Amino acid sequence: MDPAALQPVQLPYRYEFAPSETAAIAACNRDHGFAVVRGVLDRTQVEQLKETTWRVLDPERTLKPGETRGQGDFIEHAPPLWDLLEHEDFLRLNRAILGTSDLTVHRSAAILKNAGAGPVTWHTDWNGYSPLPARTPNEVLNRGEWPNGMWFYLNGTHPSRAGLAVIADSHTIDWAGPEGFAFTEYRRSFHPRGEEPKVHDRFEVPGMVPLFTEPGDLIVFNTRTYHAAFPHGGSEARLSCGFVFRPSAPPFPAPWALTESARRFCAALPSRLHPFVREYTGLDPAWKLAE
Ligand SMILES: O=C(O)CCC(=O)C(=O)O
Ligand SMILES: [Fe+2]
Image 1 (cartoon, protein in one colour):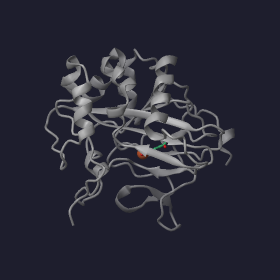
Image 2 (cartoon, rainbow, N blue to C red):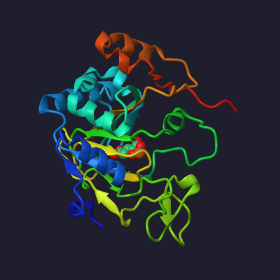
Image 3 (spheres, rainbow, N blue to C red):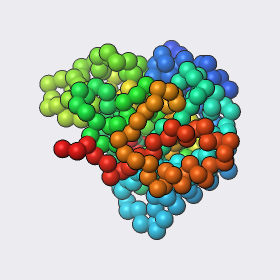
């Protein structure tokens, strides 16, 4: 299959919305596990976030062909992302999805992916299918009922250049998997029945919805929604970033202490925004479960 030849999938429901269509976006995410919101950021915000992503992830501009870098406390270093804490449509949407107006910044990330990078294999970010205690910061933070996707793909997305694909309706806890596939351990991924149980990296999967977006669009997906990214067959680096909220209550104690960087971020926010970080845990990349 040639990703460059893929076309947008026609579904019996609409999954692309204007930023003001809060209830419809939240309903699509609830019912089908994903939604695209057009034009949340303006051109200036996109440019500022691109500059910041380069500055934080690759200040020396040493990214090699095919290389991918990620950053797990991006918001702490990215003041242009703080504007979203005052973006009415973005806040209204998050309140609708989480069912509360008392929101805490939960986690954030940025990814820089150069042309030539391979695919991101099919997976759910949610870790709650595993009966084991969380062993890494990602496993600690990815066990709740908040969205795992609130992504801005700052070059837009297209299957030909590392675009994101989701599986519609894969977000329910008892989803049976794509027709003809079985799950890998703890439902992290799936594989064709009859093949060895390794995570799936091909794109012929029933229910797949390749996303086509413009810079400034927001991609929302539910906590358990299965997703993957195509190989990067384009010519320029792909930049993406975002953050999610969780409800401020109940408390979410993290097993690590606030990092210096997290502390600086909270202190640097204007005081009117402090309610969003009172319960912020940050992420200590060095933490792991003691043996
Ligand atoms: O690189 C992408 O577009 C997808 C990344 C992703 O799914 C993840 O980091 O969990
Ligand atoms: Fe993911």
